[in-house]
Image (tube, rainbow, N blue to C red; front, side, top):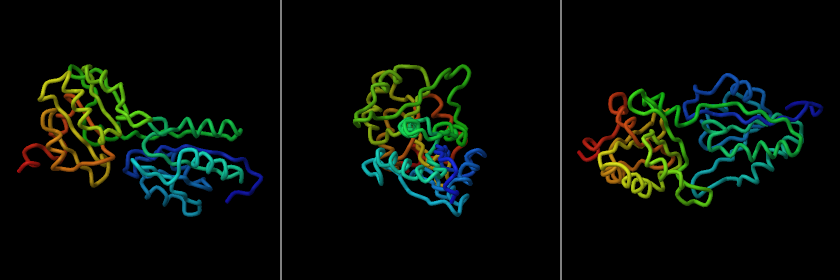
Length: 255
């Protein structure tokens, strides 16, 4: 641990989308100099091996379960910072993408504690690169939407209906529990054969990909049982998974 006369610091580090080799060099250096590491459930535990001496505290959340509330995590950050420690908050993906980072940044600022954010590869971009899925492609998709499936109160995000009417590739995080409602929204704007894919553990060895279309994705997943966390991909890009990924399709799921 640091001598007590050194300045406290909180660093939010993006752990990336699962593959531990996708951590940035800057993120690695932050981990190696940490006195305390508060880490999420989506951060690969192998990353903790980069620092054998820091105190590690698991503060992960899953749907319907959490070790600490966000308010308690904020308090832990302050408690450790009061000892003039370098506290690393290791967050899955990128801290600024659905990571509730601003709540932790504002907590540090309100108490005069230096805070830094180290970017990470988000789950959606890591998934796209690993599975050679072109989120944008000339002549096919000129834009993309990335959104959460639910609001803070657990209801379906209103943005999904707007995205469903667009021509963009649509990627939905944290939407598996709302899959029937999301598919229904897209059905109002797209044909039954509109491509849909579900990607689970996208950058890990146990990755699973289910490819179908609006009129069969629910039935296929009832058999394949891909659960949370998972990414939903709507649009022509979903079909591109066929050529490069060992995955589940209507043919082999129903065989």
